[in-house]
Every structure is written in C-alpha cells, then in structure tokens.
Length: 93
Image (cartoon, rainbow, N blue to C red; front, side):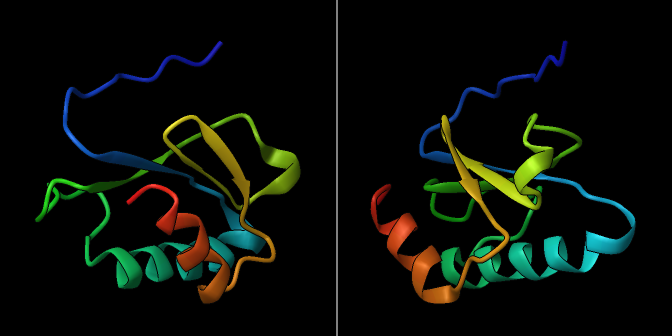
C-alpha cells in the first residue's frame, strides 16, 4: 500500500513517477518539458498558484513508465510530445 501526503493548495498538482536506471533520461526530458510549458520548477512553490510539479517514488503505473498524473488522471509519458502535452495541460487551465 502506498500513502501519499496531500497538500492543501489551490490549482493543479502534477505528479511524476521517479524512475531509475535505463529510463531515467526519459523522466528528465518529461519533467523539463513540464517545467518549460508551465513556467514552474519541480518541487517548488508555484509562482502563479496553478501548477505544482512534484516528483514521487511511485504512482503504481510501471507498465507505462515514465507515467504522470494530473490531479486524478493518469497519462502514459512514453510517447508524449510538446504538442500533446500542451493539449493535455489546456484541459486543466
């Protein structure tokens, strides 16, 4: 069982799976893309209160790693492009 501490805040929470070894480069690339598109840095207080990018150990989605969650929605990060991520983020703005 995995327990996550919830933070009370306004806006949207983005959670990433922290992956090790061979696929860690993909996670870094994905996080950098989120930082670029949201203007936020991971694990930092949000500048505008809309997004919080948090790296976590596990979200229970190893089969589609590097995976990410936005609020309660799970996404496959293996084939994400900047265009697709922009499309996804626009649903939450």
